[in-house]
Every structure is written in C-alpha cells, then in structure tokens.
Image (cartoon, rainbow, N blue to C red; front, side, top):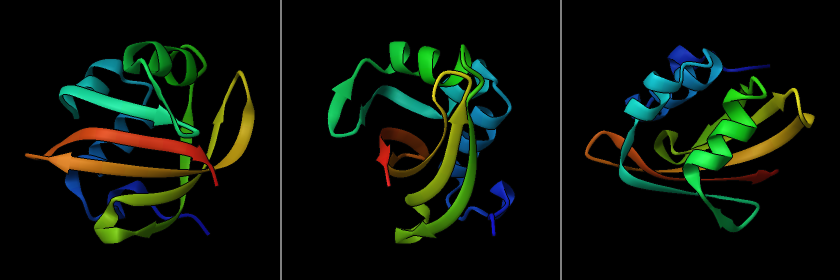
Length: 107
C-alpha cells in the first residue's frame, strides 16, 4: 500500500516529494534551505550533482510506503531510469519550513 504524497504531514517534506515526482527542478530547489546538504548511503554528496544525476536527468520517482518521526522519515520505493527500482529510506531535517538536509539510502 502506498501513501499519497498529499497525506504527508510535514509541508516541507510533502513539497519536496511532490516536486521530485513532478520532475520540477525549480519547485524542488525551492523546498531546500540555503546551504542544504545531503547524503546517500552514509556518504555526503554534492547536492546539485546528485539531484541532477539521480532525480532530474533520470526521472526519479518516489512511492511512499511508510512515514515515521512526525513525517521526517520515509520508506519509499524509489526508481529512476539509471538504477531501476529500489526500496529506500529518507530522513529529513527541516528548519524554518525548508529541507536543510536529507539522507537517503537503501532500506
């Protein structure tokens, strides 16, 4: 069973996932706090390079399976044209209504 994006409780996380699924780079960047950071499988990555490769150039999509920690931890089926589909965990740090950091990796 998947959880509809519009049911995500944290507005910043909801906007992040909505923009990612719409492949809307401008809307996605608007969800991020200035200086936002991210990691993939425990290693910090360059946010702009990673999002271009893993989301926008490869049409990334998330289907949410579960939500925890007041909407800041998601388990999702993430797929893109490069890697196919995998079960992933996403953790968000939200500050001032924007995503200051996200961490993702295989679940």
